[in-house]
Length: 98
Image (cartoon, rainbow, N blue to C red):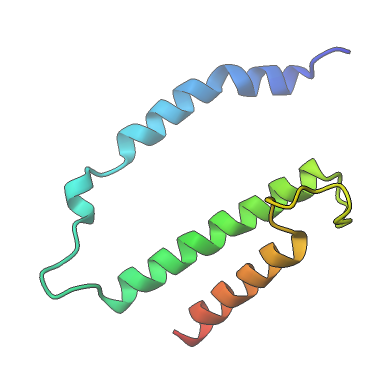
């Protein structure tokens, strides 16, 4: 099976792109909490980040399962599709109500 030229090109520029992104990340000191504690903006940013991570996890989960939400072939330690969606719903609710 031949590799798509676009995919091959994307894979060759991936390390440079990742290094460029890493260089743009601020130092860890920039993320230190203030002396007054966490602000509402900090909390909402953390919730949004968690929501996006869970969304990516759901996409990966669906890709691995072939789009099927059938629970029969998953192990007992893996979260189910319904668990992931429930977590996304609760995070979305916190974001909208917070």
